[in-house]
Amino acid sequence: MKDQVNTLLSELENEKEDLINSYEIKMQELKEELELRMKVEVHEIEERKNQHRNELMENHARSFKEMKDY
Image (cartoon, rainbow, N blue to C red):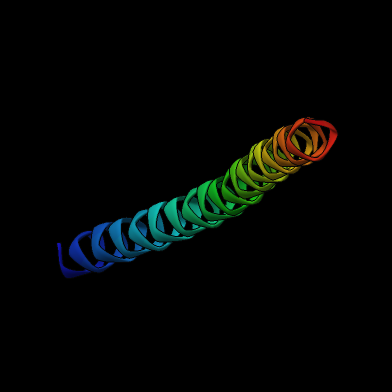
């Protein structure tokens, strides 16, 4: 009887460790995926910012030229 209890406890402990390891791996994979997604989003925002800045500079240069020509 005591051997059965010890065996069962040992099996449950092994299952617990397996679950912990499995979820730690999943958590690490999700963390890496989210970090990559964040980097991509930051890059996209920087690209939009740069494009907007360039458009503003072009508009300013065009307006300044029109004023100078006038």
